[in-house]
Length: 304
Ligand code: AMP
Ligand code: FE
Ligand code: FE
Ligand code: ZN
Image 1 (cartoon, rainbow, N blue to C red):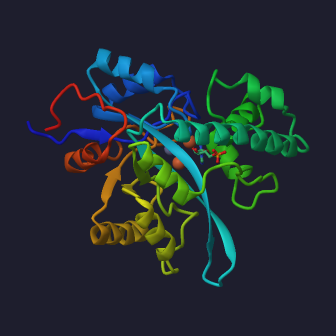
Image 2: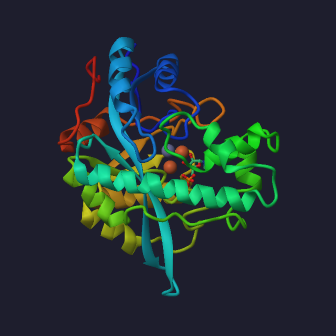
């Protein structure tokens, strides 16, 4: 018996848009056979303190992380400016870093304004109010569109989040309001490095967001991110299509970058993603740990 440990470096709790408490996420991880779990709530470190305690109690490894929403203006193949939203996983940054926390605070405040606007637009067609969204939200959670989805579900308009995303939040929907107040992608990479963290792109070039197979890949933007200090790519994620994986692996090899695999768990009824469905190798986790100069990971057992 010498099976490989399951190292899952992407999960969400009720500190953002996950459906489970921090404790429940870690308990589910133990049940799923996960050895090391990163908690990466959107734009917040508020789950970390509890996660350290629970991980120690349960004897499971814990890597503190954040999934930072970022935005970049790039040019498409025709030279027109377009906005790309990149979710940047930040592993082991110093949780007390003032510049990083300031950027996160501005992002969270901007989310509230954006989601209120989205809710008002939806309220023209569905019986739902902003107060319904607020009431359903766990205390201190980073809001995202899933919070609006939950209010619509509670009102009986839809069965689950997946249905809401298909029917209301599809690409080009009339309720859409762009994100604002989030850091520029290259600035975020530098901010995370300055805080001692390791930036890894979450679900890069995800299905429906990145170029389709045969279309040109955004090489210039990726090389800019790498030059800014990008650490790696979350290649093994259910939303990253095969042609993107091949391209990302090639780029990682060329620039000696880290490759991770993770679930992006959001709880039982959050998303279909299951804890441990993808795993990061011990060697890649060791590279993240070696580069990190901010927070400490909790690893109760040797990795091998
Ligand atoms: P926002 O933060 O407002 O941009 O909303 C995006 C969030 O919605 C992401 O963090 C995802 O976790 C979540 N999400 C995206 N697609 C789906 C889906 N099909 N079902 C449930 N949650 C989703
Ligand atoms: Fe999410
Ligand atoms: Fe994400
Ligand atoms: Zn995520």
